[in-house]
Length: 332
Image (cartoon, rainbow, N blue to C red; front, side, top):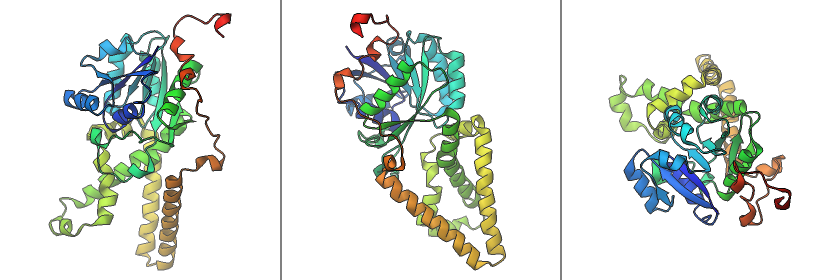
């Protein structure tokens, strides 16, 4: 007996998740849906899903789990579509960079017998600098030996959490359990604000006086700082993140602005010694982070190592009964 997993959105993250689960055909039936039929067809061709559907409702009412890997500005509408169709005991998951607001929507929209679990995938180090986006960037080892954070509202059924953790392990990653609010703050600093900073640089330079010549000279530094805008997708997605997570966005932006102001004052005062010290500290911090991110030896820092299940056939032992009848004593 398999569980049915429906992946909604077959871009880099959704298709990579499907590819990562491709060897689990005895345990999982992968259904794919994308608003673009051509992308859905491509996902099927590369083996990211077993089947695709053109009408999401036909998959939603048969699925044990659904993962929304779509832009945040489409999330609420998608939840309004699938929530009424979910079968008892099904789990709705997402890969959005903010969680608290989505958890609020889930509390409002999901049937009482269903559960919400937030996932925050961390892509493998070898793909950090890739410029590819969408399904062209999908890889079967996107999450291999990495982390996928799991965030849940208080009182979430333990079976739903186990389902999410087992999917994470089957995708080749380790689950990292994190608070919803904490995750929003962390993702603001490391995901959303770098995109805002890239937009700020572009708006301060492109189409401004002198850009006609500057564009010919812009090199690696400009490309790297402005690069996050490439992964933005539609601007509405980042706008939604900023508006729905306003307090965190303003707090982190204030810190960045204060840091820029400090550097500006060093330059204005011609304080070369202090400016050099700040730049050296920043350089060392980046080098240290990059080395740690490549090694990903987080267990050495005290994070509990998550054990991978030794018997694949038992991973979903409890989950196959999720939402169904309770086990009797002979089954325990």
